[in-house]
Amino acid sequence: MAKTVTSSSLRVGVAVITLGLLSSFSTAASVGSLRGIVQNEAGQPLPNILVTILDRSSEQAIPILARTNELGHLFIRSIEAGDYQVAVKSTDYRAAGESAVEVLPGKTSIIKLVLQEFLNAEGDDQNNIAVKSLLRTSTGRRLIFRDQQGQEPELALESHGPLFDNAAFQVYSNAGFGDGYLILPGDSINGTSTNFAFVDSFVGNSKYIFAGQLNSGEDSLWRLKNIYQYDLGDLQSLQVYLGYGRMSFQQPSLALMDNPIAIGDEVDYVRAMGTTKMFNFGFEDQVNLGAMSVVWGLEFNQVRTHHRSDSFMNPSLGVAYTVTPNTRIDVRASSKRTTLANTVNLPDGQFVNLDDSMHYARVGEQLTFGTSRYYQASIARKLSSQSEIEVAAFATRRLGGTLPFLAVFEFRPEYEVLNIEDERAGTRGYRMTWNQGFSQTLRGSVSYIRANALGLPAGLDAWVSGPGASALFRRHDYHSLSAQLDASIPQSHTTFTALVKIVPDGRPVTSLDPYSDLYETGNQGVNLFVRQIIPVPASLLNLVGLDFLTTPRLEALLDLRNMMDHNLGTFTTAQGDIILVRAPRSVRGGIALKF
Image (tube, rainbow, N blue to C red; front, side, top):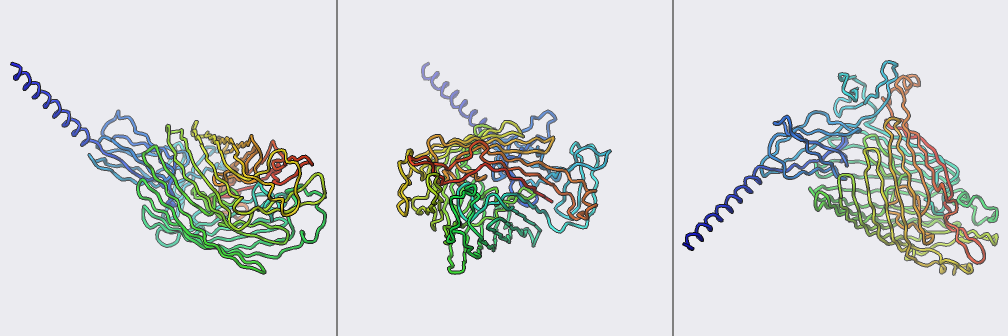
């Protein structure tokens, strides 16, 4: 009897296991995956785009939602096999037409979405008070007017075709060469900073970008850059660039020190230095290998003055790997960084970096130039669709001796010019950042930084003049906390960024984390950046003879820095205060034109 029960139990167990395996196999065989990439018409990936897929066979199906990552990639696993309708939910982009995809059992389906950008402009007719969207098709160069609410039919207007695909022009008041630190030459009070870029299609899947920059003031800088971009396929793109520039020096900038009368009229310090020529060329190759993206490149720089010529080779490498849909690892080494002052934002969302890999500094009649190396390794984890935390380790290294300081004393009329050695000028540390999206129009982030950087000891007894002054500087561990808020008001077409930075345990003379400082705000201060779109009716363009610009977007720009603290670089000693790092309160304004 016991043997019979045992055999029956064994048979029942085997049956249960078999049914479980068959059920698991059946479930696995009925689902698939979806992988895709979302791009704009220029072929650039679009991050943070909400994509929905809906089962076309069911009228009561619940949409599946997903967002693209920073590379524009989309991946959804374990989807029931079937036919799905793909849609995009965005206030800035729309799909050119309906998209559908078939998910096969046990397979990964691939889809590519190319989105068109809305360029908002208000109608100038009294009966047309609704906000319209102006789109240019990728072929035929036609203009399509479409009501955002979809209440009016599409009206295609043939045009003669613009002179370029898209372009941008930006001018700011109060130009300066350096950031919040006194790097001569540079005048942060006088002059303007002008950036522009023009884009046109070339051969095949390529395009040509002509861009330039002009900084005027007591000392001036202009440079031009030619960029050729070519898509080698859906997974690889190549960029080759060639640039030339000139710097003309008249006198050192005293504006950063509020023109102190104690400096006097020393001839060796105010004598003009002539012109410096800058030449650079290089390439950048980007390869997307599914979950991994690799960017690598090389830049050659040559600098010529009236008595010397130096050349530099600056490599760059970046690897981003998506471990899971919610986890990303990023490792990179670069010779230059993107900053707001040296970047042009095109209408299609592409950023054009006008900067090169060189640093320039003037000490008396001597001009020094060198380069930098930025290293960073980070891991980011999405906590939800709107929340992410990132932990990074970073290090910077300067090459060429381009970190001068001008010491101005309140207790004596003389000044001193110091140049910190490269091995002491570097920075290294850790950064933890929490990014949170509160809505489609409001995002924020909080960062904590612990870094080792150069500074003066607290309570310095006396200043040692002469070559030994640089020995007063010591490396210290600093803690920094920053908060950033990005918001937009769709009704008024206003966007603004508020950025606050504090260093509670001292005042370092070098930037703690320059790699992540897009706004070049330094270590401490309260800053505000505002962009306001100003509608330009087409009738006004026709009136002034600028109808060839089609419909541009004009933006007013406002830049307020160090709104609360005026003397960020003042160090107190037993003799009196010493000003080393000058980052005064400033208000800058400008305009940006996109067309």
